[in-house]
Length: 337
Image (tube, rainbow, N blue to C red; front, top):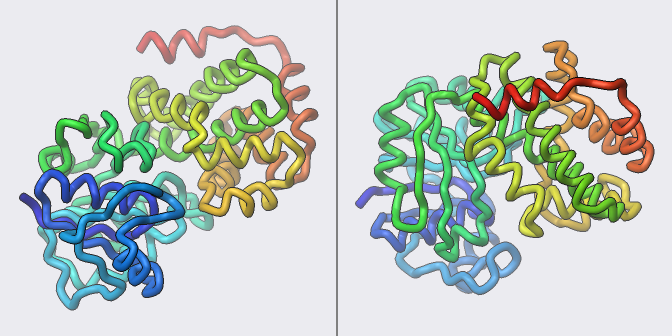
């Protein structure tokens, strides 16, 4: 049994709390929002994000950080924009032996840093682990079989997370390619927006399959340029996460894309979804990274222009279909690795 402290009482943080408690761990669920914690404590259910999932009374809840945070495993389960702040808030409270795991998927928008880089800056004395893969909170909370990757530059830290969190319903592989795992998790949200837009336009299965296939190629192209391993993108945090996010109605990014395809603006769609849509920020970061690295990413560019420059989705599709002729060898290279 391990002592686990979860920073963030949203859908995924709560689902992890429920899962960990089920398998015998001592869990504390934290949110800085007093009203949120008080509501969850009384209702013992996250009615908006996880309706029907009971939060056991043995899970402690708090809106105040302790003076000393001595849990073996601390999990950051906040949106990407809050990772730096939540790490800074515990900087003076944790010991060097605590391992910090992050389940957020995205970038720090102002610096274009990955979340592991943010954690390294804020908590240089602690090992950090990125957990990524096809893992909708709704299914993790229900105990549906789920498989993810734990990636760290410290192999021992990744194996530590694997040992603690792995159970009959939650299988974890370890991976040393932190950059690849992070980019796969962040950029699949952008492709999911594109897939949702395609669904909103009622373009059919052929178009979505093309977006997904060419999308993973773009993700891998940028990843390799940034030092990632090509084969990572054929794994759980690459094509695996892409598939689930582009096809499931659990996906906030796909749902937002559907609304955009139906005629809503990006901000109107995000407001209607009513939750963080990570692909919105990630599309801008990916576009800027592609320019900085001189990497061609046509789908990412078109999504960026639809979201930030008011390009019509129909025009974006036309631009993609009328690009110059190419050879598909780059896709074969990706899948043959």
